[in-house]
Amino acid sequence: MTTSMQAIRQHSYGQRDVLQLENVPMPQINPDDVLIRVHAAGVNPVDWKIREGYLQSIMSHEMPLTLGWDVAGEIVALGEQVTGWQIGDAVYSRPEIARNGAYAEFVAVRASEIAKKPKSLDWQQAAAVPLAALTAWQALFEIAQLQAGEKVLIHAGAGGVGLFAIQLAKWRGAEVYTTTSSKNAELVTAHGADHVIDYTQANFADLRDLDVVFDTMGGDILAQSWQTLKAGGRLVSICDQPDTATAQKHHVHGHFCFVQPNAAQLSEIAALLDAGHIKVVIDSVFPLAQAALAHERSESGRARGKIVLQVAQG
Image (cartoon, rainbow, N blue to C red; front, side, top):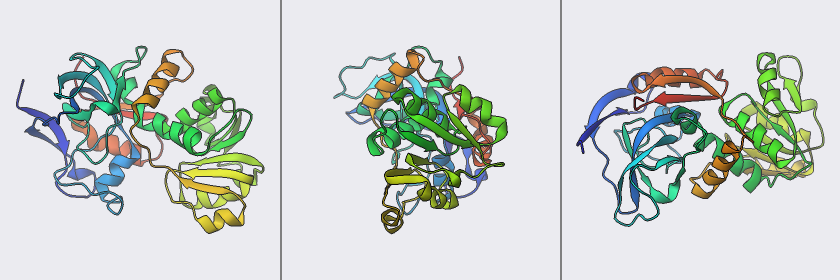
């Protein structure tokens, strides 16, 4: 096997221009790792937040750093302790975020963090799933404990996480409210939203008696969301740590969600994808060398669905 590969690396925190395509040594795998030949990698807001140094207070990365914690590819090497997997297996994963990521031709991932790629998806679609779908799953099902018949508000429903959240909530049997702009109303409705709040025309803060709010925006959006919940309701944010005193004042519960690797949940999500219960929406695909342009698209806040880097050809 080759001893070097191409990867996008940064040698310091900064703007998009710190992302450079370089020839680098192949990853060394630990006994419990698999080595994945990356076919495609997902791009997520956490990538550019880490790139900028915005998340240094909660996680530290050594430089040079390769971003990317959404991967779809095939196993090309197995650590000596790995069982149950074979070279050539098609897999997808949201790997541990403390390690170098998938903006590269190869990535080392713990075998406990991978699941079989959904059969019905191509590589690009599969790479768009893990981080966003796991975020929605863990926020709605693990933390909020969303139940059938409950009313849930999902902010920014046309985004990568939002579209998975709408579909998962609908699959669970909830009544789904979502915020988006008028141009995305048809998209979110097609994926299961029951009530669309066009934020250019209406104020979601006028809603009342919701059971769950899933905040993907933070800031003022989170602050205005408390009043929409019924007593005992649950707010889960993936952006900010909700204020405990404010939650108590409104007689509700506030939680922060930072997505964790979970192969078992990825397997459940794969089954839902293959059964057609949830679908993947791709906003755009960029070649690996254009990672900076992919970040520009993500930072714009206008992506409809997921942004993906195409790594391997074919």
